[in-house]
Amino acid sequence: MSVFQPSITTIQQNRLKIQTTISSVNKHVLPAMEQVLKLKAYSSSTIRTYLNEMTQLLTIVKDMPADELTPDMLKRYLIYCYEKLGLKENTLHSRINAMKFYYEKVLRREKFFWEIPRPKKQLILPKILSEDELARLFNALNNLKHKAMLFTAYSAGLRVSEITALKIKHIDSGRMQIFVENAKGKKDRYVNLSPVLLDILRSYIKNYTPQPKEYLFESEQTGTLYPIRTIQKIFQTAKGKAGIKKEVGIHSLRHSFATHLLEKGTDIKYIKDLLGHFNIKTTERYLHISKKALINIESPLDDL
Image (tube, rainbow, N blue to C red; front, side, top):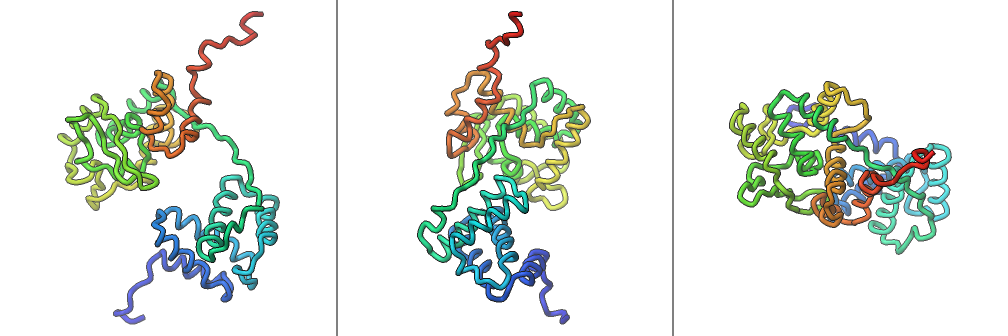
């Protein structure tokens, strides 16, 4: 290889590997799909998901032109995914959405999937931590920066990606608000800034070395966004030290925030806005796990 030839990135290597498993008659599918996804400004994670799901179809059909597949053929493929591959409902929904995007948005076929029934989604309730478990979790944190991260996640109900994207200028102590910029769905929002969290953040910024310059939580190696995986590991380590056995991740802090607000009497419409949900039905999941509605219900066993 010439020293003047640019090296191939890991992403390019992965794409090259994928392309070798796809028949020449379908080599155009993924590039065409990726182009339209980018033109429509889909998020990088959605683009990855859709391309991966479409790749699964292309590897199955082999030399059969994907552009000529009929709804009946695709329906049989989805039944195969469900019965033979044992794919879960959420994965099937992602696969249907990817296929729907290609045939409707790229090939411009109108309502191509109207006759394909979608599997019913399983209702999975969010897993939360009790106030006692939260206290043990936070007390298990000795590192000031780590404590500030997890306190921010719980007190403002933020996603882990939103924590990493927070900048110092987003903390408005005058109005006691946190500005969450360009979050999921490219949506900005404001959330409350807890006085307790403000004290923790001030202590962290003042005493931690090196002090952050732009982002609230910066990588000490690069000075840029703190790695999401590292924050997830910080949570898991603290959970282990706190002796919490529940199978929960850092997203449980966001779930706990919403549930505890609901139990304290906060209107669910306000919780929806604080969480940045587009649909109230997403927020209504917390009604199923809140103990507020159950607290006055007595078991028949108690009267025996």
